[in-house]
Length: 157
Image (cartoon, rainbow, N blue to C red; front, side, top):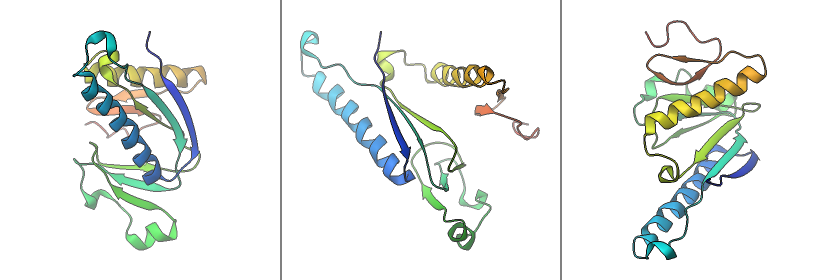
């Protein structure tokens, strides 16, 4: 059974959290590279992390999004004391803010399985089952990766 290290970061700036995630990811990659030169009996197991946090108001834009999809301008961002970051993940505009629990799994999938789509469906299912424990219905929407509560009925069409 694989160990997952849980870290609660509390309220943390998005960029500071992103940099920490990048650091953990680099440590995993560096360990995997170092292990290539070692016999299997001497290899160091890679670590897995699950980070929980919340962020001050922030909007992020992933590689497959367009800045035009951010529906507020810089003046409104400043009024809301919100940050905006273009980042190197998939997706479009994402909002995070105080009171929203955000989970960031930093796993070496070789420790589990390497089918990314299976992994994403498992993450969604874990969220759906957790919400159900609180009598909240979470659903998937065809064509949109995530779990939705009271979604816009036009999403995914």
